[in-house]
Length: 247
Image (cartoon, rainbow, N blue to C red):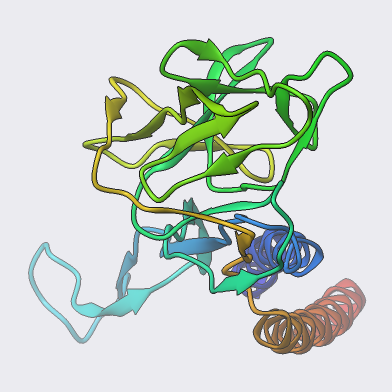
């Protein structure tokens, strides 16, 4: 009975984490370049059950009855690196990578990488992210001359009638680690020459709002079922304790 309470409680803890992840995916379903996360579960080690003190069975080894699982726990949180759909916006400050790769940006923690191509121009002319991080080119921080610029498929930036820099687009041998909503960090970035850039386009989030809402409904139902199971087991346990106390 206590094992049942423990199993339901562990399941509720896992479902709570699942709900947090799905809720975050839902809230970022309109965030450009966002990569959704998924919870991966694993079972606790199974316990082997043996029948003890059985006078009908001879020998030193008790007979094997079966296995008992103690429920599930969170094993890992994994990021889905699939690309979101590319949408045309007509905004020259929005760029999309049509293939693999990441834009390079400079943050207080060092260089980070993103698929979110929603940029702005700062008062000093720097090309920056919506969080104010400088977008990096092959020559360093990208500075736009005169406020207008064009970007070709190779990522070359033309401003003030001349080429000022080229977007530093990189990729990794191993998937980078997600930081926050749309930033990533990774080891040994390699410059990517094959990725195409589209100006006036943006990559949408790969999180689907309808799918995430359905996930949250299913999680809520499973949580309620475990709550009811705990209440039932708790009532049965209380009844058993009271009856034993009368003996």
